[in-house]
Length: 245
Image 1 (tube, helix red, strand yellow):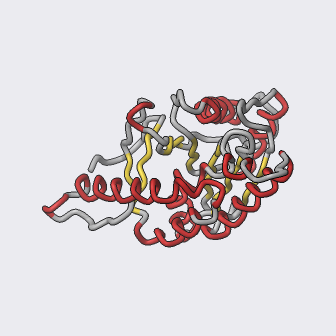
Image 2 (spheres, one colour):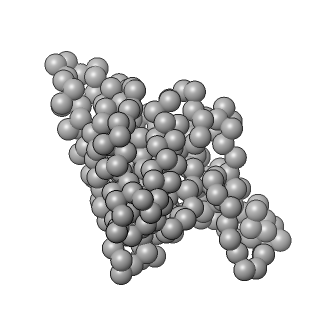
């Protein structure tokens, strides 16, 4: 992927990347980025209630269904590389070997930016654990002493995408991304997640609300961009700039 810009999304469960940053994925793919999405688990135990209500359902059948949904959604968004770690959920846990596996991906991708969950989520500790792991593995990927001779990671920004109940999570967006040009792709991806149909309207509404925030912060009635749909993100690290605007 050295010949083009790249990005990396670390998703706790196989549906998270769709709801929370599907627009960012589709938009950057259209801009020429190669976006890699790593699903640490399928969300098979904790986020597949609709499937578990079916008679005779098994764990492997739920995993297969959630994988297919994620593959279809990724195709709708134009994801360049979709990886499933299948580490289990509720709880999600990574041992040293699994962490180094993720570090290998980070170093291979050399992302211009990374994305994961909010720092805090008392409703779903898998989410905040995934971001703890993202921060830790980003650090390891920067270490010259880890697998000496490999290209180390620079300092990509880590953007935290919006949690389900943002007001409860201490999540404060400082970036709004206009996803209006790719909204239909995101909506198509959302509709691939048939196991969580109850969230389709919710995340459409979130995108509309963030579109309002984009309009207001880009100038509002004084000449702001007329964004209908947007996604919000919280950046973890300082940005280095040559000019303030």
